[in-house]
Length: 118
Image (cartoon, rainbow, N blue to C red; front, side):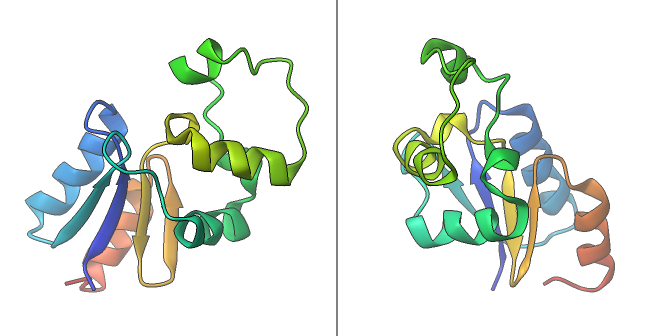
């Protein structure tokens, strides 16, 4: 199973992840949130490991557009909102088998590459 990278092409950190794996010739399956939102089960994996609040990008343009600054939602409501509005997610979300990273996970990616991801 190749590494899966979830994000958008406009995200600098997503491009950094794609470049990191490409430079090491590690196969990547890229899921662009602009074309397709994350699957519920896939997003649930990240929520179980990091918690829903760690996945919300409070600095994103979409967060500001929706006026979510003062919002105090439950974890379940945030999860539903992230499914509806994937541009609220911290990018990239990267998965290799059962190992996950959120945002810039260069150190973890390097460990995966050293261990022979491909």
